Length: 112
Length: 112
DNA sequence: CGTGTAAGGAATTCTGACACG
DNA sequence: CGTGTAAGGAATTCTGACACG
Image 1 (tube, helix red, strand yellow):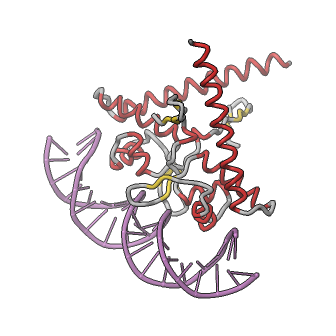
Image 2 (tube, rainbow over the protein chains, first blue to last red):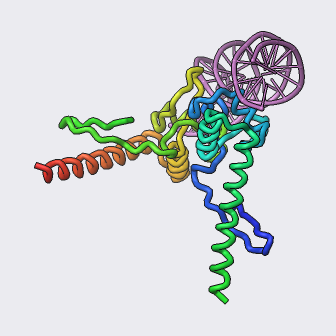
Image 3 (cartoon, rainbow over the protein chains, first blue to last red):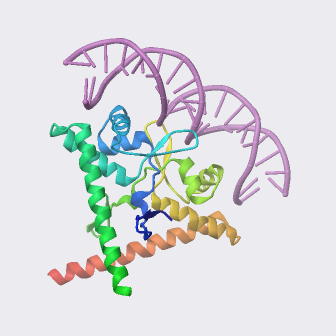
């Protein structure tokens, strides 16, 4: 089970459904997103996505990754640059983590 | 959008979420199910599952297929033979279709 | 019947580079 | 900066067959 560890020592189990399983090859991912394999690999190089790797080294994406890629594609169309998208994505997950941590702290305090 | 067509002329849209998308290669499917690729291909030969094919001919499975394979694996362990499993699976989907058709008819009649 | 395996070939994917702009 | 492409190689998958039982 994957966990997010807060610096306060509190850990949070994250749901790992079909959506988050990295099982899709780059070919299918390309079909699903409409992006070329070249584009997908480049966005990885620019740290916008992080697929898993098989033992042999082939990339594996999740449906969540596919969604993120479509989102990235839209932002690219809007003239946004990869580093801007990266910042935005990181900001998003940062917000999400803070929200989760906040709720956790709140719940924890209530138990005392 | 995929549809099921009843002989009564009524058609039913089927939800096509992540679970039903055939996007997983046989290697990952093997890992997810614990079955060998040989076993998976054999169960296909015996009509227990029907993966999609890429243009090049490689098999693509859905998470639903993965679940079905695990189910098949359990039945095989119980000494069931492939033709028995096939019958059971067909009976299941038959029941499911009848239930759906029944509900559809009921809903349709209420509108008159 | 169900499954392992070696065999030869085709499809898929990988990396690093050159190109254009 | 973002993306296409040709290049050479490695990883993945395919089929038909032989084997065992």
